[in-house]
Image (cartoon, rainbow, N blue to C red):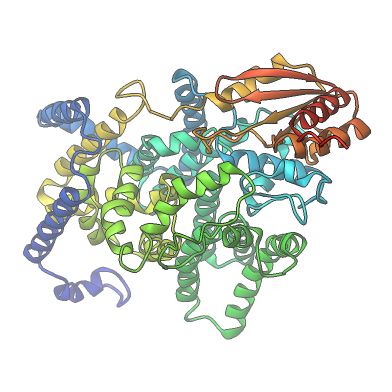
Length: 612
């Protein structure tokens, strides 16, 4: 019986138009050479410790033993095609195991389980406001004493960040959970969803390998117990891709609504990252709807828009309440006031923003100006070559030698889902060109497309030399696994997370050394680290409700305003001065005692009046 015209075998003659095996091999070799060039250009030594190289050579030698290779190949083949149910439960198991491992890594290396970054403190303040149903609070009568990084104290008291991450983390406040627990659960969910999405895109082995690659990222391990927006954005990215994959199966309206809600959540978490995600997914939806009726297209995009509305409404309300303008976010206002605007422009040496606090001035000159100087028309392309692209590869690959496999992975972009997930990377690079700063954890957004490219590189090389498919796939998979495993702490070198003595002292030692309720003043001296800023009242939505109120030391004259206010409103508080240089604590008595002391100091400094 002849095959029907629509069957695959009936279309076999059309394959004659495909490239010949010899041509594919030539292209694969050229792409591998491009990968070698990229490796040599973007940091050939990164990740190549003696241990990782030694383990890789041992794995290569052992995998050349036929019996071992066949057993490993059979085990990998067994894992490649899990049922949907098995894939789902495997992802759950991977996520739980990842959360446990991430906690063990952090605890085993003695990481401080206290907020350290400015961003963490800001998110904690925002979480307490959201827990009370507020996006901002009225200005404090002593607003200047509460001025700090990334917080507005005038005309309202508010965190400047988009509220998407804090919305997810708000149960931490309601349930009185340790601040690091929900970030840890989110990080575990990110690893589990990475496994599930890549399993859907490639196969079960690819999903497990992608999860391991993410765990091998030092930067991902760093943020796994931190209250930052980036792991939340990663989760929103993965869930959005999953919702799109579910939608395109039957194009059900419910999944379109879910996709819109997830994109809306992403948009109020990290808008620039959300744009990098939304553009490829929007292209995918348009492509899948190309043969549908106009009514179907309008209904689908209408539901996606409807899903976004609740989240965008929250952002618009926050914009208007904090900046007074519906379409100006608090972040945009803060960046403009800090002279850290988007775009490419020469740095004006005289353009330093006015700063009431010395630490803000130091932060601008030492931290922000170098980013601005590398973000001009003349410097942006060299910065991509020397810093941005190497940073991405170092963050998202356990060893940059693996970049050799990324270009050849293009040969395995054989369907729309793979293409669109990969497309996040080329959209990310020019989109982030408008932003002067580029910190390592920004690169986590493209961990998925880079891992996918690496895995597809293995598949492409194995598929090009079909006679050795299993041999090549097995050896390359084991080699990539060896690099990922030797990048884990405890196996290779432990992670270096920086030193945060002031923040550890403020969050752990200070509460035990003082008698609450209290007020603690924090002076900033030349030479102090502006990245360690203790003046955040992170356990309340309103500073005066804090058991320990943290304020800036503004000098004798201004401090009298502080003493007068609390002598009148909360006279039972104990006042202290904390010196971040030696962690010493000076007791200043009650607010009235502090006021008398300040008055005496001012009187002693006043010039003597001439005798009549």
